[in-house]
Amino acid sequence: MAATGFAVGLGNIWRFPYITGENGGGAFVIVYLGCALIIGIPILLAELLMGRMGQGNPPLALGHLARENGASPMWKHAGHLNLLTAFTIQGTYCVVAGWVLWYLYKAATTGFAEMNVEVAAAQFSNVLDSISGMFVWTAVALLFTSAIIYAGVNDGIERSVRVLMPTLFLLMVALVMFNATQSGFGDAIAYLFTPDFSKIDSGTFLAAVGQAFFSIGVGMAGMLIFGSYLPQEVSISKCVLIIIVIDTCVALLAGLMIFPMVFRFGMDPSGGPGLIFQTLPVAFAQMPGGHFVAIVFFTLLSVAAVTSMVGLMEPLVAWIEDTFDLPRQKATVTVSVAIGLLGVLSVLSYNVMSNWTIAAMDLNGILDYLANQIMLPLGGLLIAIFAAWQVKKSSLREQLPLMPDTVFEIWYLLLRFLLPIAIIVILVTGLS
Image (tube, rainbow, N blue to C red; front, side):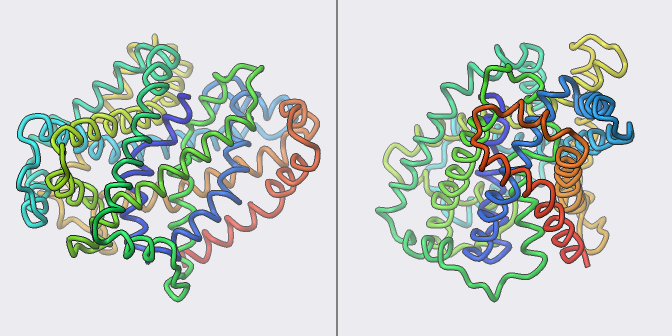
């Protein structure tokens, strides 16, 4: 459940709609689903497996498995790459989580009555311009995350996820059903599920792989650490199935929740990171009981954001604990402060540093590109190669006793040959 809470978060509800909008709609959705199923599932299974077999933070787990299997100790650095990816993502992610908490506060205090497209856009612009406001709400998001990590995985995450994730799912279904009664729903269906393959290029595949990895949560150390916490009696393949089904459903629901409003109000589908913050308040203003629905929705979205932050921070805390022999509390504070400092730069990149660009990208764009379109695929590639080429096949089979032999052989062949080639081709062509 903790791993599901990590996978299901802002990557599905905030990032998937705007990345889809920036990459041509239905064609991107098809490529994304293909990447999630063919590339994401096998690597998610491998990452959870490496975590449970290695029993430690990512570098420690991979180093332990390398020694056991006579592989180079340098493989531990794949774990360091995963940690660096998690840290990089967390630096910008905590700011977006702060936006969610801020919008929860707005929903609870002032609501979104009489909100229209222009007012919603101006409100989000004011959020980006408010340095002090973003600092405060980013700090609140980090404090919530730190408090949960203090409490531990079982007490801190699982108890909240068991109740709140199903509630979030049901509320999203209700919002989609509301959209189905309004104009724009047919346009959204056509946009999401009628692909225009002329819009696909090498960059689309790279963006799709990055989104699949970001959404599922592979290549960023979280699944490795949750795998190390997973009891031996729990079926990893069952966990993977649950995570993928819920994750994919939530992403598609997010599209059906956001894009009908985009077309209804004549907005730009490629509206960027602020897309959900400019569409949802307008919808809440128009629906019956919208004030209450807005409070509930942003409460649940806040939980999804924080549980994903926990998944990103937990491996960093575990690594600091083990490497520097610090108690959990001090390790949590250390990681939180480091992420907060990167978050400060992320906040400033939306306003006073917005003109500081490299290759037409500001700092947030650079961090997003590096983490999601280079480091995540590279991290997933290394996990696939390590699991399939460095760990004994018999050891992998022992960890998956309930998996049918045919399914195991297909997974192993994918991991050993097809996926590394596919990821390398996508990386090379997408970056060229």
